[in-house]
Image (cartoon, rainbow over all chains, first blue to last red; front, side, top):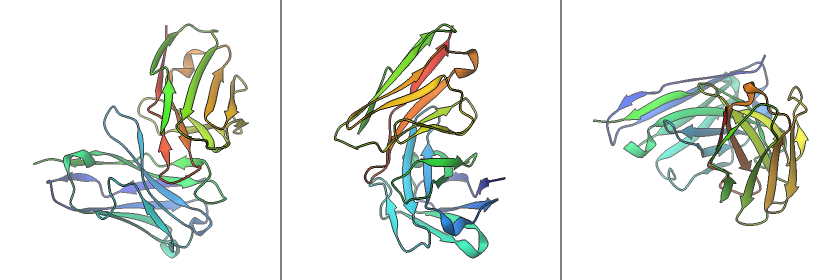
Length: 121
Length: 105
């Protein structure tokens, strides 16, 4: 069974940092592009970042470019999101998402339950 | 940019529902539809505009290409109460529509 389990969320002060992790199981992580997608409380889905199968190519939403870094360790079956210079606008549930085979230009088929990041003083 | 309409719709069981998603530029057929129920993660219903996912009830169907896309739910059931999102993967940045919330009367 495919599972994506996020961790690392919590309460952080403005300007602070957090590192999110996503433990993948039930499939071979190295075969898939992966995304992070966030959802502010009561709001819609917003794509944050994507990474290709071997981690050699990454892409970011303009709103997080230069502050967030996506990475992966396929040997550990884990996806990461390093978040720096956090602001209130980053408060959201962050979902780890698997992309269907074929590259970034495909649909997504599995979503983790998400980890909540709250930026507040 | 993806723009969905309507933002909200209150419907009765057995009714037919149509949700539209309009892209600001042509995206070919790289448009996908998701259903999100409260407290749950999104579930893929339709990929590449019209390809239904395994296990999705046949009352859900998708159509369209270029800039205009439609998700149709025939004979709505109570369990279809949810928010529906479209998603384009034609080009970066990946974008989602703002969502359409369906309420069952």
